[in-house]
Image (cartoon, rainbow, N blue to C red):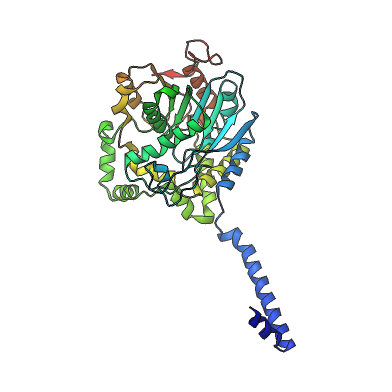
Length: 403
């Protein structure tokens, strides 16, 4: 460096001035280029901090105070049999958690999101639920604002352990027991598997549009068999088995990713909604939140092909475990839910514990967003027998349908 400076000092003054002007001119041009680049072709940055900030903006719509924390579920050496540590790093892992203020003595309700979602998807329900429960919502390991370790599971058993065991470590860290466990979609599958393994901690199970009750064979899906035989079906089946996830599309689109998410949110929860549509603020904040959770590092999303076969049929159907059920269960489905409630009906025939199935009108798979009031009525009704804040008439609330 000193040699370079000495050489510079020996240059004629006019030449040095000319070179300096050229360097400044180039720097200004580069700066101008960078100022134009972000607005046209730049990837929108995302990180855990961006996700937590987007979550905070979304939850600013609520009235109930809450505490957000990153719960440490520990660390382990590389090669540990504890599957969420199967990466090159032995750094601690964290579960992003929000806990809402509650009345003294209120029962605890733990909420687990589905595939491609995060706990913020329940934003339309938190205020009303917090009036009767101590609500604790989490981002599963590898999702949302939680840690995103490298996903190296290679089987259904390892993949289930990733989610079930990390949830159990989180429960220990939070010192929770005797709680109501609510899971949506894939989160319903995880909640059910957890309750099968650790029934002593779960007072009541609420499965909202749960995935994973039937296999393709049990469902007798002839249309899927025919579709898979077509060239389009063969391509999609190959992508599925290659673990090509929807999130990869969002990342691959780069600067156009947020616009794709906005169009999805506007359509699914707006023009094509099965129930009440989002207002402008809700749509804007949810879109921002969804984008950041989808565009972040791939981790938990890579569970897809190990848990489900093409068509979202379970590789290890919960129906096969129904006779082992030990926790009273309430199933909740939207009337237009693409998840098949007949699987729950078949499971109920084998269960030895109380079980009821409720369908909510004007709602699809995201029943808690489509028709939040009816969804809340279904939750309160399902918990009516054991909570002092949810006890009420044994009559099913108006508008709900018991299957």
